[in-house]
Amino acid sequence: MDSAFVGHLHALRLALTDPRFDACAVTGALSVQAGARGALDQAVAGAAAESGGAAPYPDRLAAAVEAAGTAVQRPELGTLVAAVPAGPAEREAATAAVAAVDDEAVRLRTAVKSRDGFFTTFCISPYSRYIARWCARRGLTPNQVTTASLITALIAAGCAATGERWGYVAAGVLLLVSFVLDCTDGQLARYSLQYSTMGAWLDATFDRAKEYSFYAGLALGAARNGDDVWALAVGSMILMTCRHVVDFSFNEANHDATANTSPTAALSDRLDSVGWTVWIRRMIILPIGERWAMIAVLTAFTTPRIVFYALLVGCAFGALYTTAGRVLRSLTRRATRTDRAARALADLADSGPLAEFQARLLRGRAGSFGSVYVAALGALVMIAGAVFLPFGDLRVIAVAVIYVMAAGLAVAAPLKGALDWLIPPLFRAAEYVTVLALAVKADVPGALPAAFGLIAAVAYHHYDTVYRIRGGTGAPPHWLVRTIGGHEGRVLLITALAAVLVTREADFPVALTAVAVFVALVVLVESIRFWVSSGAPAVHDEGEPA
Image 1 (cartoon, rainbow, N blue to C red):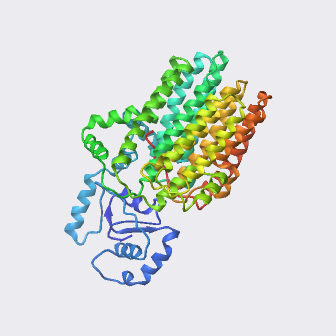
Image 2: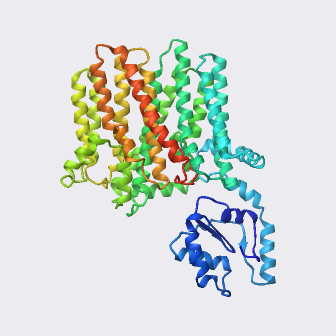
Image 3: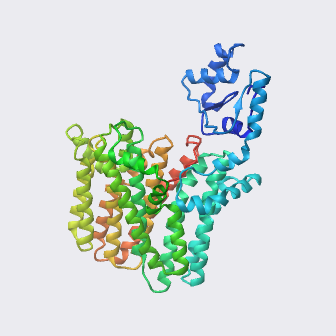
């Protein structure tokens, strides 16, 4: 840091205390993590270390570090000041500029995400940022707040499971409190620059754990009153998970794609200039803030069945709206997708050894055109067989074999087609709906709760894959995917179990539970090992509006 530095304290925080970057700098200050020490040593030993030069010494070092091949993060300062004045007049001007801006107000304002839903922006963030500051001043960490949010949501789920009106009212209130804490943890991380590997893992997974646990609580509460809504709970979880996979796949496919802007994207950009349309389009997709507010209010004043009906209708509309828009963008925008994007989509597809064997046989003889149509056909055939054929019918296994073959053919070539980002959500829908349909058709106590547990365990694996890719560390290790069978292996296993247990349907829930426990144990152990290791990315997930 240059001894003549003049600027805001928060500008220095941004440059010197953010753990996410190997090297970070503002005018007059530079910090490096262990990953950039080699580049710094070269910079110090080179010409940048020599005395003299027009630029401040830290700035010359930063330029040399960057020239050595290490990216240097230069945070956006906005109205914050970071300067090294050359003389008394410049120092006086810089000092005046510092005095004119309240860096604490800037720090508090920038703790809130710039893009969020209407409910979160106007009903939560105006006061949750002050809770975040209160937590920071008392030494609380984002991870502690995240854990408090999870515990609050689990208590809310327990209250809903009572099936009593007081329990539903308490559950609604606690769910809103949990959401406030959920907003606070990210704001605390941004306010105090406390980004961590553990925080990334907790923030990436606890939202889904909270929401799906609440679904289970509602289903248990309804069962106490003689209303079986487990199928609706499982359906809601499937819809939300598939919707998120659509978001993730589309974003990864276009992460570094190059192409002309499509007319659909251009229209969206024009609408962004009309403020009220931005909020309308964010609200109609029922993002997490609006969704949790709706769940909380309906839980307090209606019944679990009504809550799930509202969820299914609202989320189905949101999913159709966003997916249709992305399909139109993909068809009208001739994107050139990179090998990285194709690899990410293949990882999101979650292909196991059966599909990989098919792909190896076909590699070099299959074209990318038609991959998504093969996946769609296989998914539709699988879903139709699970839904319309009797429970335990051997033809369902034959349909599952066809699905395995389609799954291998779909990923035999690099996934660079315009609509190939739809392949992962198609596979998710086929697997999850097959489990749900077979559990419904088994028509025995415990089948649907067991299906809920199995889908939740597999969904965790899929979310974990997404956040590893986002962190730049790639998908989970190949042995993990092979051990849990891949999507096509699990589908074939579940249909085979249904056929074997057709004369002992009461054992089907036990089989589903055993598979769920196995998948959950393998996935969780590896996930925890990865996210608490030093190799995990030091990022804080900003979350998705949905």
